[in-house]
Length: 234
Ligand SMILES: Nc1ncnc2c1ncn2[C@@H]1O[C@H](COP(=O)(O)OP(=O)(O)OP(=O)(O)O)[C@@H](O)[C@H]1O
Image (tube, rainbow, N blue to C red; front, top):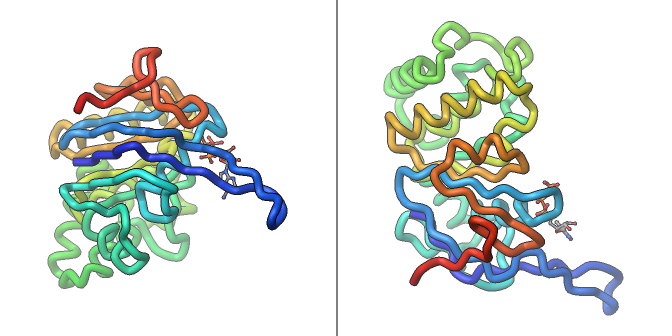
């Protein structure tokens, strides 16, 4: 489903002609299977966002290979990434990233509109999805009329509505209190179990890692598992 081979990334910091190389990801390799929930736990500055930005095509890696759903995306240009993201990836963010002027229904509907799905089909799909995330009674609320947990449910519904191959989640419970965090993790587990959706989650929160079968740790750009450097079996 998602295979990363020998991924490395460096930033170059400082004034022109005096730049210093800062290696942020060092030879990271792993493989996530279809239907798996995998988490990467790391402290601030360990390289989590850099990894996610590379996996979503917003940052080109210095070296290494990325395969998603059988496609080698390593050398995609911006146009190819935009199309690929719409068809294959769903995103969940710590700050929800909902459009404030759109209702719950419209926020979830938007990716379907972008894909050119007809209005009746869009409406059926959105209503079904709102039921699955427990928001069937909140379709006409605007984001500022929803709690944090409800807003994250909207963003999960929006991520799932196009039936993507994998959901990339960046600190999905980072803005929520611990009770709401438990609710959202339960929902992610339910959607994974019932619909076989693959989740790749980055977090600094060990509680989040508990919902995954395999949890990796990122320390200073090096991937670890169970305390040792993680090397994918070939
Ligand atoms: N565009 C950039 N230019 C230079 N250095 C960067 C850039 N983006 C990130 N870095 C550096 O790379 C390192 C890893 O950053 P990254 O944002 O990936 O960490 P993180 O694990 O996501 O941290 P956090 O949990 O605080 O978001 C940090 O030392 C950061 O300063």
